[in-house]
Length: 113
Length: 113
Image (cartoon, rainbow over all chains, first blue to last red; front, side):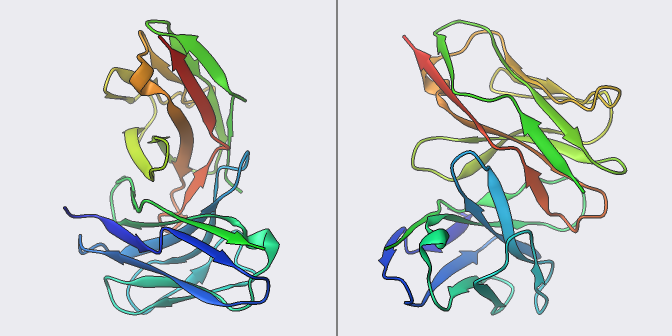
């Protein structure tokens, strides 16, 4: 089925370790986004990519980097994980233009100990 | 900047009860408004949307009307089911936000038989 695929689904890291969260979409969408979800705070935007080759900071970018590898893929990297980055991470994509909603992946639950 | 405020939960109802989840927003210009639903262990799914004042979005028995005069987009359902138990997020996309969504904090709904 068409959609947004995130890997891994679960991950436990030790403080200071690095990792990359992968996201791929097969809907030919131009825009892609990374959000984190924390209890009582809804979803907050980390980074986004309005189109292939561009990336911009969102509301909470500190401690993260992103790469828009091609139109399909948008990865999120934690260079030195901290306990404050324990969260559920969602990738989403959207076709540019119009009032279209997003398509979300199923999420990555990350725990930093 | 843009912001969304939802009624605090959790909300607990009996099956066939009437549901209202309040949502108000602050935004410049003319935002598009959305309700997303997240079932346990899953990503967010678009429930309904409205793109201009007085529009009514509807889906699966849920409705919400875009009220510009009160800056509100309250979610309603006349008769809830156990299967409606989920987390509901109100969100907006501003006219100049490059497609970025701003989310409310989410409202947990539990429906008992």
